[in-house]
Image: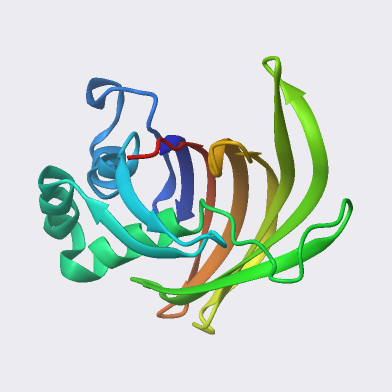
Length: 206
């Protein structure tokens, strides 16, 4: 679930700010256009089928969320949301776990700005006591790269953690904070977009 998302876009007309924590009445007309594209993903829930190694084999969304996403960008936007939600889970290495060991997972998805590659690095930190329970902790770092030469990544930072419940055989919960700043060159003009988001995940077995 995307708990909160903020976005600052700087272009020829100045800076446009969006914060999903604010109501539409607190936004100007331009920010409301951004809200139309982003707001349906904030607080949205998915149902996933996950393999024993953590690979997401299927992602399902509600009919209402599917309708809202299609209104924004058709089937491509639905697939984009599903790809992003797949990246919120963890895929375990076949070689097994070792404290301090890191490994990568790569997802390539298509957006209105072209293809994006998301590289997620997990680092196993061993067992930790969380709310009087022993859970396995994995630190998370995400890097984003664009295939579109018109888009350059100026800065990106990630601070994330996933807690896995071995007894239940699934992720218990996770929280990932991301901040990124990109520059887009179009028609001889450049625009800068800064985006930050907090993604929280809580998984229940069916």
